[in-house]
Length: 88
Image: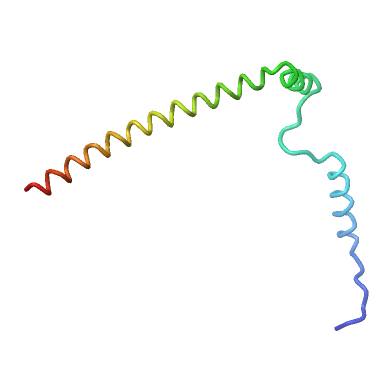
């Protein structure tokens, strides 16, 4: 072990300064305009965002039901083939 204290380099200090600056305005995703922000807030207030989400969920449900129907058809065919093999 050494008793020397860590001394950051000039490059370290510059990099940390840039990170600090970025941290002040950090956000996730693409920045949005004030108008878009206002529209999004209004959609929460009036509930239109819920309708949009419901529509998305209903579409996903329809896709899932179609997949289920396809799987049930495959199951039916497999069961028929299995029963035919047992008889033979």
